[in-house]
Image (cartoon, rainbow, N blue to C red; front, side, top):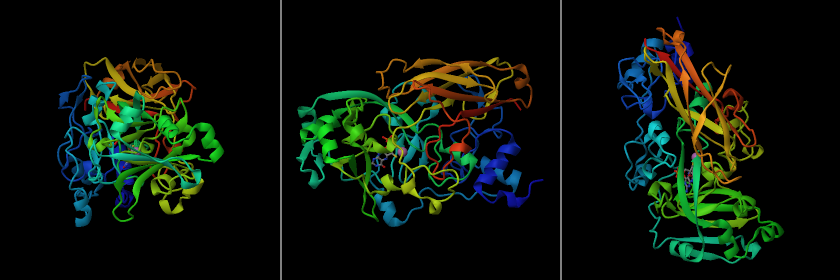
Length: 485
Ligand code: MTE
Ligand code: MO
């Protein structure tokens, strides 16, 4: 019998649910998607019953019924989850969100205001290029209502006054007329991708409990920031002489209380590097940018954490210092695992996330999928990606928690420009199911890890990289599956 006191925190509840129900990665119990009677998009291991339809892998699964998780929590541990109303904002805040764009119901919502959502995993995996409608969305603030149109919007490109550079005001038409157009296939990944794995170790303060889908790939068309810099009289040598170490990009979206616009910085070195491929994009997969993705123009910083790719771009500034915004100075700086809460953190001692490490995840099957009695193998599929232009050279899969590994087949994304592999690789492997795993009560885990062309690989455990904000989770990715109960 487990004592009630053990269930005080959502983490404890999650842990015990996991232990008592056997399998499954439970979404954080305080997340909107698992509270009250909201639909649950991911089947939850342990409480899925083997009565559902077969998915593409021939596995039996179904979504949990409304209220089922709540009932399971109270049945098993006597604790009750408090439903969170995602629409419960102050009237003033509510007003800020009145102009939000229409979104497809297919997107799995992590947070409504500001909007955060990830693509359904099956669809995400079915194509190398993610369709615009389901590309993950990560907004910190309301979508700006003052973004103007592609015909009227102007961006300012300038330097700090001390640097005595020219200042250019450019319309989208100017970008198209005056500069060479480039198209790049780029995978963007949010620092919060796979936060749910960090939540499973210990509570984190990052709000959206992202699953493994805050990553997507698109063809972005626009102009090189290198060319824009030259237009105002700045090249890499001059930047070094002037000490213009930083590029700060400012968005049109802004915080009502602090009146700060969303802002992030990257080094001028990356921004002006011929191999850096930093662009100001005006098209996404051949179409105008959708409102959620920065219409009419945004920065794209390939190989770097998603947050540097500033949307609804209004200004690019070169200067000696980086942005003083909280998104640059405080957030997106992973602290060591010893720091448990924000009050203990010393952001100035923690480096900001820029280029990201190697990552991989299994998107099929989903956690808690059920092995059918007649099944002899499972098709395992996923993605792998590495930051800073590193290509993926190998993906390994284990069905025994990492004791033995088999190399998966990389099906897409193999041939990318050297040193500029900005897009992910998709992979798959058929994993045999040993007969004992098919017996009643059988459990099996599927784990993946990838290597990039510098032979960097992923850390084994999430605990060793845990940070209180839930950033940059790239440990081995594990999916539990079970036999029919
Ligand atoms: N730019 C602005 N102006 N405002 C934002 O909230 N979010 C950032 C970045 N650029 C953000 C922004 C973050 S954290 C990420 S991960 C990416 O945009 C997400 O881009 P997407 O929504 O097009 O997928
Ligand atoms: Mo992000």
